[in-house]
Image 1: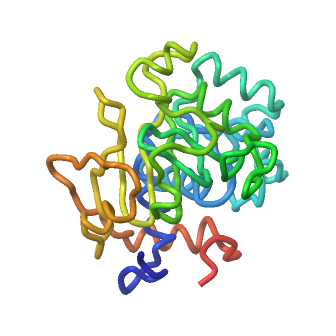
Image 2 (image 1 turned 135 degrees about the vertical axis):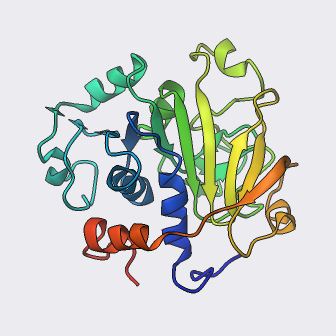
Amino acid sequence: MLNNNINEGYTLKELMACVASRQLKNGKSVAVGTGIPLVSAMLAQQTHAPDLVIFFEAGSVAPQLVSLPISVGDSRTLHKAMFATSLVDIMDSMRRGFIDYAFLSAAQIDKYGNLNSTMIGSDYIKPKVRLPGSGGANDFASLAWEIIIIMDRHSPERFVEKVDFITSPGYLNGPGARESAGLSENTGPSRVVTDLGLFDFHPKSKRMRLIATHPGVTIEEVVNATDFELIIADQVSKSLPPTKEELHILHNVIDTEGRIFNN
């Protein structure tokens, strides 16, 4: 496992934000929560995706963000927004296919991208650990076209063969399972960003696949940190470090108060 400074000049958190940001395409729409997902979306707007439309779960659509909100209900999420609506309307927009990406995280993830943020253990009534639960995560995972998952600690305890509880569906138990459960075709997790690398999902088997390792990380380290059998891409690339421009924007435009990058 890497420490906070994976290489001189930038931190691991900064790298993850940049890698996540680069997954977002211009002209698309994204539903975000707070923390790295929001920072990544704002960074994308400031660099390669100026026409990215941000949706907030609490009801703001397409605001002009001049500073980093502390929550999805922060009044700053409404600054010059196209709409100031409600959670119900945001979920309805997702159901109608208007939202391309949604960011999620969890305590556990399995090889099909199923996420657990409900409980750790085998007994739902008396779990080892009771977690916060779904919130809007199940809706996001079920209804958005693509899910980008942020996992800040890649370990065998978190990347498990089978999650203890499916809070948010990935590809369930494999190809065709989402559709059999009543979810739309061509939806599901598309990327996983961790402190070790970047992953996608094999188009046929729907299993997680390593496509890039971060600087200083080997494929063997990623495999050893994963409890399930991980597919390795034919060509595994290296994540590009944050550029000077990206670091400047992160600190001097987005997170000016140091809430996320407080170093």
